[in-house]
Each structure stands twice: as C-alpha cells, then as structure tokens.
Amino acid sequence: MPAPNIDTIVSLAKRRGFVFPSSEVYGGLGSAWDYGPLGVELCNNVKHAWWRWLVYERDDIEGIDSSIILNRLVWKYSGHEATFHDPLVDCRECKNRMRADKLEGYFPEGSGGVRPENFDANARLRAGLVKCAECGSTNLTDERHFNMMFRTTLGAAAVDDDPAALAYLRPETAQGIFINFLNVQTTMRRKVPFGIAQVGKSFRNEITPGNFILRTREFEQMEMEYFVKPDAEHFKLVDEWVELYIEWFKGLGIDAANLKLHEVPREELAHYSKRTVDIMYRYFPERPEEERQWEELMGIAYRTDFDLRSHSSKATDQEGNRANPDSTEDLSYFDEATKQRFYPHVVEPAAGVNRTVLAVLMDAYSERTNDKGETRVILKLSPQLAPIKAAVLPLAKNKPEIVGMAKAIKRSLQPVLRAVYDDTGGIGKLYARQDEIGTPFCITVDHQSLEDEAVTVRDRDTWEQERIKISDLAEHLQKRLKPYPVQPPESV
Ligand code: GAP
Image 1: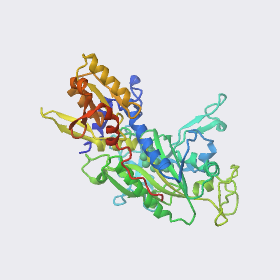
Image 2: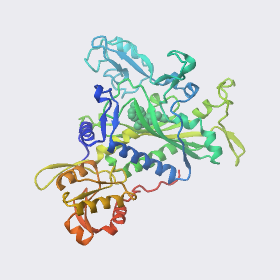
Image 3: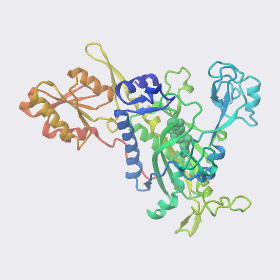
C-alpha cells in the first residue's frame, strides 16, 4: 500500500527528520526544502546507488563533476538563452502570476494538452477561454515568455545589469558534460560508444513550483550522456535505456504498477530532442481521473549531435558559415577504425534525485495494526536506501552492563554498515520509531545477552525476531541487507 497522497509524506518527512520547510524561522521560502539527518542519508544513498549502477558496474561510463556556473556562452550556444522559457500570464483580477500552459482552457478541447498547428494562445486568452487557477477569472493578460535561468553577476566590480558580468546558474547538468566531452574522451582513451555521468544541483526559476520536492527551483539531477555513432539505432537505444531505468527503479523498491511511459509528442519536444520518452510516477493516487495521477520522474531523450556541434569551432550552418565563432575547440571525434571524423550523437537519460526520493518514499509507505489495535507506519525502504541499516537498543537503559554491551555492538557494526544506538524510550516506542524511518533491523540487547553473548534481531517488515550470536552479527546483517538487489545491467 503506497502513501495515499504527497501530504502524508510531507508530514512524515517533517515529523521524522527527512525534509523540513526551508527558512522556516523567517516564515519560509516558497517551495524550498531542507533535507534533515535522515533525508540527506536517503538522498546520498539514491545518488550512490545510481553512481554504482552506471559508473562502477558498467565498463563504458565515466563520471565527472563540472562547475555550476559556466561561461555564459555555453548557454547561448546550447540554445537555453533563446528557448528555455515558459509562457507566463497575470490575472488582472486577483493579480496571481501563473504558468499559462497549465491553466484550464489554454489548450483546445481534444488536443490532449498538446499545441495544435497554428495554435494562437493569445487569441484564446483574449476570447476568455482560459481560467485563472486562483480565482477562476478569465480576465488574463497576454502571455509572454519568461526565461527560467537564474541570473547572477560575476566579479566584485560588476553592476547588476553589466552584460559582460552576466552569468547563469545551470538549469541542467548536461552542458557541463558536453563541454568536457573531448577532455574525458582523450584522457580516459575512450572509444565511441561510451557515456559520461554527472550528478549535481540545477536551478530553474519555475513560475509555479509546488507539490513538496516534486517541483522546486533548486533541485538535483542525475544525468548521463551516452555518445554513439551518427548511424547508430538511436530510437532503439532510447527504448533500451527506458527498460534499464524501469528495472533500476524497480530495484529501488518502486512497484511497476506506479510507473508508466509517456512518449512526448513532437510539438512538445525540447529544442534539442528528436525523441523523448518520459518515465512517469503515480505521485497523485488520490486524484479520481487516472490520467491526472502521473507526473514525470525522468526523461530519456535522443539529443542528436545538437550539443557537440553547437559548441564546436568548426561546425558550419546550412549556408556553410562557421556556426559558432566563439568556440576555440572542435568537439568532433575521429574514429580510427573507419578513419572518419564525426560529431557523436547522444542518448540522454536524465533523472531527478528529489523526484526519485519522493517516489521511493511514497512507494515504501505502509501501515500495519499491532496486537493492541494501534496503527503503525512502516517505511519499507529497500535496504540499500534505508538511512540507517541497524538500530541497537538496550532493553534496560539503567543497567550499565547492557548499555555498555549495546554501545560496543553499535561501534563494531559501524565500519560495516550505518548503525545507531538509541535508548530514548521504551522498547515498543523505539521499534515504532525505527519502523517509521525505514530501518531494516533492530538489535535488542537484554539480560540474557550478558550470559549467552547473543542478541535479538527484529525484522522491520515481518516483525519476526531471531537470536543471533554477537560474533556472527555483522556477517548475518550484511547477508540480509543484500546491497545490490538490481541485476547489473548489460552494456547497451
Ligand atoms: N538535460 C535534460 C533535462 O534537464 P528535464 O526533463 O528538464 O531534462 C530532467 O529534467 C529531470 O530533472 C526531470 O525528469 C525531473 O526529474 C528533474 N527536474 C526537472 N525540473 C525539476 C524541478 N523544477 N524540480 C525538481 N526536479 C526537476
């Protein structure tokens, strides 16, 4: 039973130290969130699982970590300065400012939320067909384009509107990979096909952020650019990566019934994409209409050779003129086998860390009633993602021998797995707390432990208990934690 709605997770996340509303002491900051002690562990575990899966377990992917602030020209030639915008409207009645294409009536009926040919948004707005999301008025302004890149200025002498000092916070991690393509390819002596992965923060000045950590202005991406030959079967590669990611999400504990694919219509493709398939997650199970329950978890795009070509000094436009007079490097690749030079094409799986974390939390949520008729929340997180793998609990906290033994067991487990010691309540309360934060195992030290050098290991999901010798404990837990539930992927 997954969480019935996102609000359930918001309250659990705050109550148990996963995610807090940001800047709360100053009244908050709309749609910004801070990750607490357990949230940061969960995020790190998701990122490590992804990195292990792609960079360590495959032999054809390298990792990098590029700057967040890049030369402004990167965003000029990537096309983001000109095209990375959303349509914005204001309500003349309630003064609300909104993203136009999310409003009721923006698209003609039957268009399925896709811009038809000769679509004229302003004609529809002026005809009063589009409704304000706040007050329902149709008295809206014309739409205008709003570029979503955050602007900043570089250097002490810069004034706010100095174009020479203008810079952006990156809206995707991908460009840091493209501009380093040759650096990675030559230093690591790579042959196409190969991939470059990067995980890190991205920033978008979203017009209408919301739904907890689903849409925020600061978020984290896990992106991988897979470079292939111009004549590779690009569309088939998109399908193959979709399948690999579905398996990966399932390995993180997400039920396949809560995942579905969305082939992005041609009219909706980003400026660089020839084909994109989104993997959607059921973030809104409470909505009665099935088609409104889903939101994008990640996208897999065929980006052609658009980015490498755009950043290259030697690439030419349709008239044969140099397309990028600012670049000092040609990012083409020489294929020794065929003696041909070309710009590699790219298939890009781009996933969000925060959306993955939210999906994992929603899917892991479950409730169970105990013998006393009390309902308990159990977070059935995949063990590899659980923030804490084992909690060591003394049955009597006023018995120094038991406390000493429990603390020593915690210390002995720590080099092998993340363990905590907790004596802040009665055993029932301690179990309930660990269940609610997804700890797979509770280890109880009792009076008998002093005699038989054994402890009780309690399973989070079944509540079954077994007695294990302290000398065997680390190995026993490691076996049951199984760090790699996902089959290592075959190379594509
Ligand atoms: N490089 C391609 C790219 O950035 P995208 O579909 O715009 O593609 C990829 O973003 C993923 O990043 C999304 O599927 C989502 O998981 C995450 N993402 C994008 N915008 C986000 C936001 N405002 N808040 C949280 N996650 C976001």
